[in-house]
Image (tube, rainbow, N blue to C red; front, side):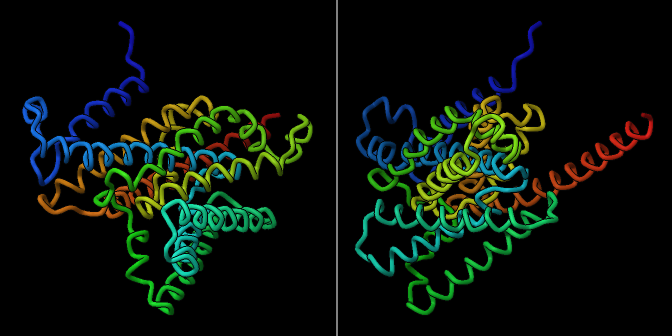
Length: 334
């Protein structure tokens, strides 16, 4: 009997949970109501439930792929928009937009967020490239400290210019305010993910190091900049709509890599599916735990993501030490 692939299982699970999520909420929306052309139910469905689902799916796909790209380019499995200062830099960009262009549209804020996300990510990458002795754990810790510095500067400026209340919507991720006409910028994720698919082999080569890239005639710095630009653009387009969503880009690519390997093109579909499914499950939990009230998805993802991060950390350390011991035994037997 032929086994069902994990990709199919993820796709089917995502389909059924997506369908179920459309009918979870304080205001009752049901299939019979939609079939009987209830105007109120159709209004809620089209203006809130469906946009929310689409924003959730784009967020899961985008943040997961952004993390996958950053991990490959930086040659570290614990680099992501969370630990690479990308999210915190995007939040600082939104604050700058609120300060210097208070009447700016969502697209204007997204441009500020993208520019700052790219600058912050590049500073982090350039810094870790100049560290002589770095390991798999120290690099993300440096990124977390750098992110905290940026968040501290953001909070200071927000307090100084009395912008704390205005900025609060982007500091904690949630989908409760996603409505038709104010979320469509997340659709930028789709062409950016397609670009990531097209240039996946280039990212894999750059992930093997500068010398390896040069030997194959590939511009290391150009591909690195292009890949980080994609990751920064994805992060900015999501943060400006739903706020800070942590851990997705860190956890999802690592979980998929356990059974799919490390090649971007080979893992991209599973990473996108699992990322969407993970975000959707967390959103449904946030809506049901204290129903009819709602918990921010950042809280649910923060708890689950922290636990998964600890498990992955110990797993990587354990298998890393085992690989070193095997290499030593092979060297000793020669």
